[in-house]
Amino acid sequence: MNGAIEGAGWAVLWQAWDMFLHFFLLSFMAVGGAMTVAPDMQRYLVAETGWLSPGDFNNAIALAQSAPGPNVIFIPLLGWQVAMQSTYVTTLTQTHAWMIWPIAIASALMVLFAIMLPSSLLTYKFASWANHRQEHLGIKAFKAGLTPVVIALLASTAWLIASQVPEAPVAWLPAAMSVATAIMVWRTRVHLLWLIGCGAAIGAMGWV
Image (cartoon, rainbow, N blue to C red):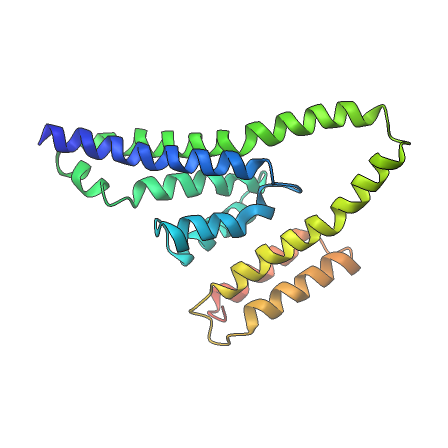
């Protein structure tokens, strides 16, 4: 039994290590923040490995968006959920339930470190280098070219989340809400908290 318990603990940490490597590479592509690479995270965690359900993935993002602080907190939530919902956790709960929380916390911290470290270092180094070359044509072109890239990545994330709401009574409503919200953010000065509150109210009424 002890061997099985120990093996289950290492198996959960191996999942976290696999996530660490994947998120570490994604960090180099996270132009505009971690949210821009959410589609690939969903592909990896839901479609490829099956470690999370579409609902679990969406809930992590929704909680991070509604909670105070940076929305990057959905990353450790994903690591936490993968560890807590691992098939190996059943073995741990039999006699070593105390191991679950430390392993889940370790999983959350590993993926957060993976997504933050490379992008943070690159941003710091590039910002320091580019700050002294702001008038260079190449720097201006690079910054201008990033704008449509970030918009496209965020649009793909919004589409992904909206398309993964199977319980919505009206299939097109989540997508319509995403488009309406994007237009309001773009064309009005309505505070984001009002939009989040409206989304929460609509969800509470069971419309999505």
